[in-house]
Image 1 (tube, rainbow, N blue to C red):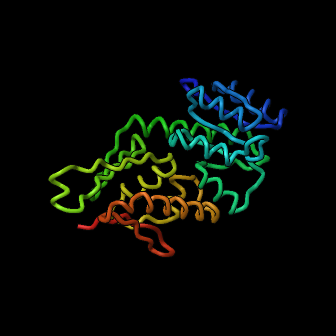
Image 2 (image 1 turned 90 degrees about the vertical axis):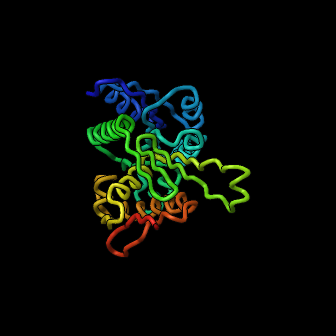
Image 3 (image 1 turned 135 degrees about the vertical axis):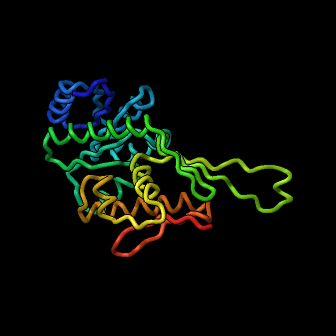
Length: 245
């Protein structure tokens, strides 16, 4: 049982499954808000602070993917877990692209769900309590706050004398921050794909490998504003974060 009660948003339209899952969560020490459709869940999310969101994919009024996208418009940090009977590569990639952090495939073991919840909550708490700052090129990665801060270079000395461009600040999702942290903590070294997968997702299966590629593409896009920072792809091996001098 967790020491402090975390607030969990559970969105599931199967009444019997939802009741069982909610009861187990409450017995395990969580505060649970249960919603049966996506629109009601979005309204609840806007009114209350949640530590974790668990979303069924197939929902009335607004499906889980659309709900995750709406949540990510205002919150890049709260972990999102999808409950789904869909386990194809495309479904997983779509889920990660919409802002999800993990999948629980139906039918699932309730103990596994509770353990995954606890892992995400502990990881989130630890990343906020321990400050880790990485400076690379014109970029600062604040791991504890899931932030990328890029000092924008000025175009000329004439512009520099007139004004200083404000930094570009981007909030990362938890998974994006975990992947970037794996690279930053091994800067200028090749980090193996399976090592990142085991550390961030807890498994190195093929489908998760495809998901990792999605996250690497996102990070490259975010970092493209800094010409001094590059994520190199070492085919068949892994990735390396390099800083140009």
